[in-house]
Length: 437
Ligand SMILES: NC(=O)c1ccc[n+]([C@@H]2O[C@H](COP(=O)([O-])OP(=O)(O)OC[C@H]3O[C@@H](n4cnc5c(N)ncnc54)[C@H](O)[C@@H]3O)[C@@H](O)[C@H]2O)c1
Image (cartoon, rainbow, N blue to C red; front, side):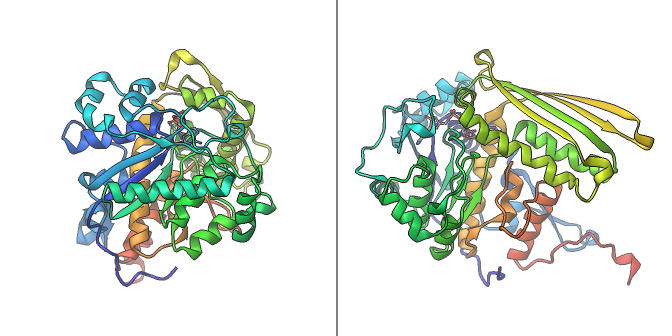
């Protein structure tokens, strides 16, 4: 990547398009509206709360990330989206019951005005839902054309200067990339032929990239993570990122596992189970959607622990992940982890983690950060896969020649160094000067 000579300022309105106006999307939108009216803080958002150190420690220069890089202000965001149900953002937020009524009521009018555009819905990809607010098209190429028209209309009607999209739709069934995903030409042909391995999410992503709208995938399903999408994104000079927001249990895993490895503690087993009762949980109750999530969650430990390098510590580690749909819990997910580890001379120990989390409360700041940072990336002239945004994902996209980086702390360092480098600041290596001055 070449260092940008110039980063365009974040002037004007930024449209944030969210395919899937469910729990995560409405919690994000309501949260931004509440924060900009002074009714709450955007806690968990790196772009809003995070700082970055510049220069040497002796210089004592730490600035807010949003002071270092030009990112859109919350006041300049304009939200829109698609869903396969007609509920506006207010009704969808009430239905999701993540935020309390007293919060949602404060931004009632703004939420009411956000009505989803009709969704692209071939039902085989999300079997637990039967959408009623959907597009009719002659084939998948026509679906892409209709989504492109929606994007243009939104840009025009809401007078947006720039757009960005984050997939917040349901997790689709597990699909492996096929020949259709190998190149732009083949994918275009596949759209004409209604290829069964082209899912709804891929149709939105394709339309966004063609409209030069940066796109992030917050779910684990195949969406922009295949050669044809990388090629299209490069050709159209559009940044893309994914996949699967890193929240809850996996967030904790990528905090704890690097710590065990740093101290050369061994691991025999890691058993994780969750209960959740929101619509996401209902969709994941279908084994084919769960399979997509399982693959996304399982990759994490293998990559962090590198059992091939540390055979005595991690070879043979048993890693299991379970998710149970349990309606009484709604969005208040509960996760349990049993970690079997060992120390000096192989003596065994155990750690039990019980995380009573709130799924969408953890995901909302990631949607905001991804929208703002992808928009920044576009203005800096970055395009194609944005590996420096791995920090936000459970299953980060990576170039075929390298393994994805899962360690949260390495991901954060990479993100901050990319911002420093983008703005012509010195990249921080943490090498002490006292040894060689
Ligand atoms: N909340 C988290 O912590 C978290 C973490 C990682 C990933 N995710 C993923 O984020 C996504 C959203 O999660 P959620 O809790 O908001 O789920 P949700 O079920 O509340 O919302 C998903 C929405 O997508 C809509 N939808 C489904 N197919 C669609 C289509 N083809 N076009 C338009 N809309 C469509 C559904 O109708 C629903 O309103 C899920 O895929 C979930 O797995 C969430």
